[in-house]
Amino acid sequence: MKKVITLCMFAFIMVLGSESVMAQSTPNIIEINAAANKKTEALRKYIKFDNDQRDQMYKALKTYGTRKAKLNQAEPNERSIMKLENELNDTVRRFLNEEQYERYKSFEETN
Image (tube, rainbow, N blue to C red; front, side):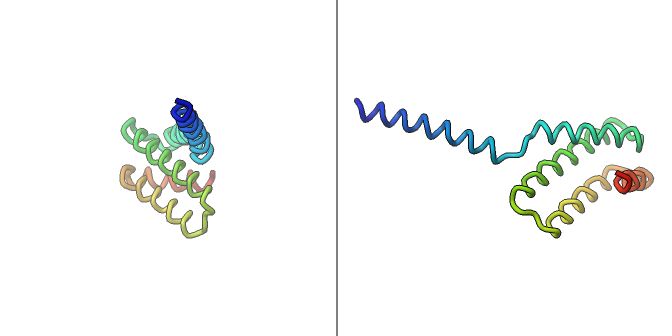
């Protein structure tokens, strides 16, 4: 009986330990979502896009923020950062028209 209790306690401690390690290694999703939301709203005012484009922009920025946070944890290099930014630009180009995309690029240059 002592061995069963010891085994259960050991398993319980391992579960608690793994949760704290996971919490420290993953980027803070709340901060990423807040930053994506803030930038989306600033872009919406500057570019004047519709609700569907707003949702797509938020999703693209959230994905970018999550991937960049993970990249920053794993020693980023110039090439990987440029690749990530190019992927964001390609994604944004797909759902914005040409004029909106030009305004997006000018917004990015000024901010």
